[in-house]
Length: 358
Image (tube, rainbow, N blue to C red):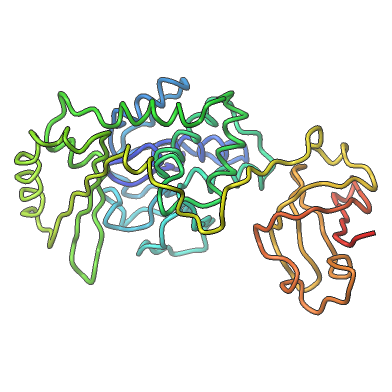
């Protein structure tokens, strides 16, 4: 029986698109999986699914006895019914590790990024699997939504790099315009019930043994909520009365957020891209100078992603024009570097690189 790939309750765009993307990736890696969700798509998510021709996952409310891969959450408070007897095989998330426990080792990808789809983009790259155009479009939208078009304090350079890659694959030339399209749909209020508005982006958390609910409602102008405030307050009190210590609904003015200057203290973001025309090991030639990103650091050197689905090694002796005792003195994980190809061994899948100057 297929394992379910499932996100948190009251799924947002990241939760549903992550389930679709991980299902695609894991199927291509030979796993028997099926996308699932703990609810129907929100208006924003439905817009994204329709725009890129994606199908909404099956809605599943009870996972008792099932094998699961969790996406975009790892807190039991956000899990479906039957979680106590389910078998968790893996987690992909961008939040802090929650209280889900397992009886055996699991496949776990948890990064400090602004969106789970950023993590998944890097998973596709790590495994050397091509991202389909429709899924790339959905993942791009998920990142734009979660990071408020890069204005959220949780947005990282990894999110921006992932969006650049996904936009190229999806054929999206104006990323901001796409984000604004989504937010116009996301902020629509007419026809929605108070319950739907509060739960549009809502999660329960365990805080010191107390159940606390936190929701977020994003609109293009807070004045749009004036006639809904009393109804929203009553709905919050109702949800609190269902056994919660507290319930909070955060109201966000999208346009004011977008007017704010970038919060990244590292200065303007410069999009990173791998060398044009270099996508496989066969494209590599001795002496080529290529941009890359440090993916791992060991005692004997650093591994660098140069865009050919196989990381190259910069041996410790090749990190600088001086003696290096510890590679961490010279490079950091995720650092952008310029390397030169020393040798390529295609049969053994080995690439030797140098960062030494001439």
